[in-house]
Structures are given as C-alpha cells and as structure tokens.
Image 1 (spheres, rainbow over the protein chains, first blue to last red):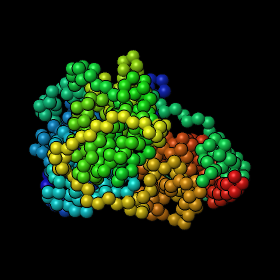
Image 2 (image 1 turned 90 degrees about the vertical axis):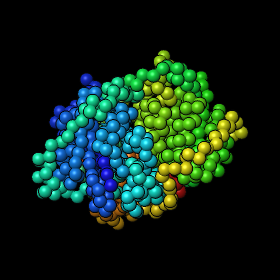
Image 3 (image 1 turned 135 degrees about the vertical axis):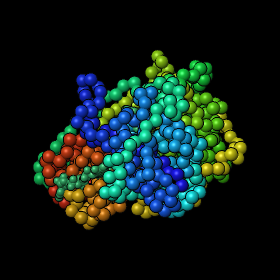
Image 4 (image 1 turned 180 degrees about the vertical axis):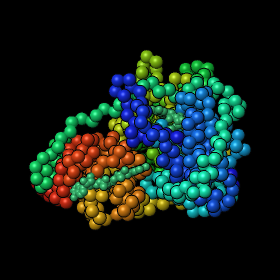
Amino acid sequence: MRIVVCIKQVPDTANVRLDPETHTLKREGVESIINPFDLFALEAGLRLREEVGGELTVLSMGPPQAAEVISEAVGYGVDSGLLLSDRAFAGADTWATTCALAAGVKYLGGADLVICGKQAVDGDTAQVGPGLAYRLGVPHVAFVKGFQELAEDHLVVERQMDDGYDVVDLPLPGLMTVVREVGEPRPPSLKGKMRAKKYKVPVATAEDLSLDPSSLGLAGSYTQVEKVFAPEACGDREMIEGPAEEAGATVVDRLVQSKVIALGG
Amino acid sequence: APRRTDERTLASKGVWVFAEQRQGEMPEVVLELMGHGKRLADELGVELGAVVLGDQVKGQAEELFALGADVVYVADDPCLADFNDDAYCEVLAKLIKKYQPEIFLAGATSIGRSLVPRVATAVETGLTADCTSLTIDSERRLLLQTRPAFGGNIMATIICPQARPQMATVRPRVMKKGERTPGQTGRLIELTLEGKEKTGTRVLEVVKALDEKVNLTGAEVVVVGGRGLGGPEGFDLVRELAEALNGVVGATRGAVDLEWIGHAHQVGQTGRTIAPKLYIGLGVSGAVQHLVGMQASDTIVAVNTDPNAPIFEVATYGIVGDLFKVVPAMLDRLRELRGGA
Ligand SMILES: Cc1cc2nc3c(=O)[nH]c(=O)nc-3n(C[C@H](O)[C@H](O)[C@H](O)COP(=O)(O)OP(=O)(O)OC[C@H]3O[C@@H](n4cnc5c(N)ncnc54)[C@H](O)[C@@H]3O)c2cc1C
Ligand SMILES: Cc1cc2nc3c(=O)[nH]c(=O)nc-3n(C[C@H](O)[C@H](O)[C@H](O)COP(=O)(O)OP(=O)(O)OC[C@H]3O[C@@H](n4cnc5c(N)ncnc54)[C@H](O)[C@@H]3O)c2cc1C
C-alpha cells in the first residue's frame, strides 16, 4: 500500500502572541515544530505500514526550512519525503494549499491512502484534509480515533462525533484525518535518527508540479485575511477573598446575580 | 486570485443554513444559525434558506419555517440516513450550483467540519472555519467572518471577495438562537437523487458509548477537574458539582494521563475545544495547552491553592483555596438558594 502522510511545520503556538502595535505575529524566539496532530497521523501511517505493508512517504508544503519536519519524520521511520517549496506557495489559504498538496500526491505517483492530522495548530481550520480528498477524487473520513479493520482495499475506522463515534467503512483509495486517540508515535529509533541525518529532502517547485502560479499561494486563494487582532481581554475579573467556605458561597451568589446559573430546575 | 467572472457573484442571492441532523435530531447550533442567518438575510434584503439532508426528515421543514426560513430544500433518501461525506457533498454541491446562494453557513460540529470543506472545494469557493462573529460590510456587500486562530491567541477577520457562496462554519454557542413563530410557512423544494450518491464511505454502526457520551462541545456548563483533585475519587466531587449545575465533566490532560478519567473528557489543545456559558476549573493550573481549549468560555471560575496559577489570568472569578473546602461550600449554597426558591 502506498501511504502519504501530510505534515505541516507550525510555530509552537503556545508562545505566539500578536504585537499590539504592529498587529503582526511575534515570531522571534518561537520554535517551529511538527504540527502536534500530524504526529498522530504519522503513527497511524507507521502502524498501517506494519500491518498491511507498503511504502510510507511524508509530504509537506512550506518554506525551505520545513525540510526539518521531513527529516524528523524520517527519524520516526518513514521511507521517504517530499517538500513542496516555492515562493508561489506563500500565503495560501486552504483552497490553494489543497491544490498544491494534491499535485504533490500525484507527483509522488499517487497514493492508496492519504493521512492528515485533525487540524494544524496555527491556521486551525481542519479544512485541508477534506478539501484534499475532494481534489484527489477520493472519499474521506475525518476525525478518525481508532481502527477496526485494516486491509489493502478498505479500512474500517472509528470516527469521533460530538455524541459518540461512528464505525465507518472507508474504501481505498481514500483519505482520513486522525485525532489523538490513534496514538502518539513511538519514539524515533537510533537507526532512524542516523538515516535522518543523511537524508537529503527532495524538493519540488510549482514548475516541477506543472502548476500555474496564479492557482497557488495568495494569488490562488479565495479567502483573504482582512485583519488580525488580539482577542479582547474578557470583561472584569475578581478574586474572591475570604475563607474557603465563604468564598464558595460568594461565587455562587455572583453566578446567580449575573444570571450565569439559574436556580429553577 | 482564481479570478472568475463576476456574473456568478452578482447572480448569487440568499443566505442558506445547513440544518444538520443526526438520527432526526437537529443540534442547537442549527437554531443559532437560523437566528443569525435571518438577521443577515434581512440586512441584505434576501431570503433565508435552510437545507435538510437525511431519511424521513421532511417533517423538519415545519420547524425550519417556524424559525424563519423562506425556503426549505429537502433531500430525503435512505442513502442519506447516516452522515456520509461523499453523498452529502454531492447533494449540497448540486443544490448550491443550481440555486446559487450568496452565503452558506453550517455549524462547526463534527459533521460540519468534515463535510463543508469538501463542499467548498467542490463548488470552488472559499471557506472560513470556526467563526465566532459574522457581520455584513454593506458597502462591499461582503460577509466579514471573524475567527480565532493560533490556538485562540489571535483573531482574524476573513473575506471571500471573488467567489460565491461565501461559506463559513460557525462555532456552537456564540450566536443567539432564532425566535420561533409556529405556523409560519414557506416554499418547500424537494430534491430527487440520481443514485451517484450511493458510493464512498458507509456508516456501519453509530455508537453512543458511555464514556464517549460526554458532549463537551455542546454543554452550557463544564466543570473541569485537574491534578489538584489528588486522585480518581476527586472526580466524585467534580461530578456532584456538574450535576448540580446541569453540566458535564471535563478534565485536564494531567488528570487524563494519570487515568483518573477517560480521554473523552479532555479539554485543550489535544482534547476538545469548548466555549460554554460557564467553565469551572478545580485544581487546574491553566497550562497554555489547556487554556487554548477553554478561554473563549463566557464565564470562568477557577479554584486553586496556588495564587500564581496561570488559570487566574483568564478567570472571571478566582478563588485561592482548597477545592475540597470550596466546592462543598458551593454545593451547600446552591442547595440553600434552591431550597428557598
Ligand atoms: C489567522 C489566519 C486565519 C486563517 N483562516 C483561514 C480560513 O478561515 N480559511 C482558509 O481557507 N484558510 C485560512 N487560513 C490559511 C490557512 O491557515 C492555510 O491555508 C494553511 O496553509 C492550511 O490551513 P490550516 O493551517 O488551517 O491546516 P488544517 O486544515 O487545520 O490542517 C489539517 C491537516 O492538513 C495537513 N496540512 C495542512 N497544511 C499543510 C501543509 N502546508 N503541508 C502539509 N500538510 C498540511 C496536515 O496533515 C494537517 O494536520 C488562515 C491563516 C491565518 C494565518
Ligand atoms: C503537545 C501538548 C499538548 C497538550 N494538550 C493538553 C490538553 O489538550 N489539555 C490539557 O489540559 N493539557 C494539555 N497538555 C498538558 C499541559 O501542559 C499541562 O501539563 C496540564 O494541563 C496540567 O494539568 P493540571 O492542571 O491538571 O495539572 P497541574 O499543572 O499539576 O496543576 C494542578 C493544580 O492543582 C492545584 N491544586 C493542588 N491541590 C489543590 C487543592 N486541594 N485545591 C485546589 N487546587 C489544588 C495546584 O496548585 C496546581 O496548580 C499538553 C501538553 C503538551 C506538551
């Protein structure tokens, strides 16, 4: 089975803040990491390769430094990687991103299964997986949390829903996005790490993919970010003092007064 | 941009709401979308449409008319009984291409977040995820779509000037529910399927597993326990408070990793993102990976023995104290007030 896992390099969002004056993201000192959800996608790929055999490739679109996440994935044990990198890709929304990634999958010779993370922690949209599936002309299941059956031509997966889960049959070729429950990847092996050090990450440009620059990046995006701003600091804050017993009663009173909790029923 | 003729943009009319249903039940977010959709439609001077897909769902048109729909589009077919991205996408894309709404809204639920990006790609337009505010820029006749990104650290306003419909998924619990006017009616448009929809994925079983049945994202009140509970028994107190407030139980990853409670309860970056009316954190330190999953809550109460715990930075009401003393006092006061009511 040919498996492609899409991984994105993201800033460690825990430390990203907006500069209140310039309204731009403060990126200094912010480390770049593999999108945490993509580690689960990686694990799902490793496990599938183990059980049904085949080849596992990681695909990423990003600036040249995103080659780091591909090397890191090689450390985890994937067979190969491809970085899509070109100025023309910059500023892509999810529409333009799926255009490039779909071309990347085709450039790799196609895939029986594409695996994405649930969402990226920077753009945070969770839109790339389903959009990519449509571009590739294959069915998808989003938010997969477990597997019941893994075979060459179909998977039976558990899809997380708001009120439980669905057991879904996914015919292959297909795409899935995965959540944490599928498991974190086993740590990179020493052998993997050695290989990662020497691995030269292949890079493809828009031209290599035969893509028209006007369908890519900012130029190829339907959505535009009109402005970014810091979230409003939410309302008043109050520290309720006094001994625990009193404070407990006081906070209930506050919640009742401000109609946050209703007493009836 | 993928610049296209403005014809389609100009011809597009109407605000549509995807009236998601699961086993015949519409989640609350549909009522919220109908309420907000109506306001947007009125402002634009266009009709409000609602789309229902499923099996034996025609009856829901009545409710959607009552909520203000001028038109209800129904695709009623056994192959739409269970949620299926391929079939649902096929039907929605067909409807959108035929009737050309200018705005299309869906809930940012498990179904909406899986389905709508596929549909947006099929109809070749932009999609804004997880919006918390939607307003009209009347001068440019554009939908201003505001959403959190970077784990809630920033807000962004997104527009889609080149293509129609302008599509957005909307976070549950941020828009005001619509008023119901029973007896109100409108036009019903039924769609017959072509049979192509019967391919793709297939739901084999719908499981509402007990442990999974924590509807964190839909709850109005969430009481979250952290490692400060000291052990799995600590969650008894969390459950008691949650029950008294008609809420559900959440947990930090700290508590989940120690196996004090199932992962279905986890709130935060690698768990569920929640924005309830009331969040209560008990023995929760407020690590940033936790905060990103709950800081959009309307009211936040935190109880922690450490006055420097970061959770206090986002708390509406903070109490520095032992949760094992504070929570029983809260329960007593609730009983007292309720007994007297
Ligand atoms: C503040 C802000 C708001 C934005 N809002 C929107 C919006 O509402 N709509 C919109 O269309 N775009 C939006 N974007 C652009 C969006 O972030 C980018 O399109 C991005 O390239 C992909 O989207 P994402 O980060 O949301 O990924 P998601 O869709 O959340 O990612 C899901 C999965 O797709 C895969 N994936 C995503 N990107 C890549 C990549 N570059 N390489 C390899 N795999 C990848 C990964 O497996 C990942 O886990 C926004 C950007 C910013 C900065
Ligand atoms: C990639 C990544 C993803 C993560 N994702 C998540 C996530 O999704 N969700 C999440 O929650 N975390 C997540 N974490 C973990 C996060 O960093 C914290 O470790 C975790 O949230 C801490 O849980 P806690 O608050 O229960 O525990 P602690 O940080 O140990 O805090 C316990 C608190 O209880 C207080 N306390 C102790 N006794 C009492 C008492 N008797 N009364 C009152 N207060 C008391 C203490 O003062 C302390 O502040 C993630 C981490 C990483 C690296």
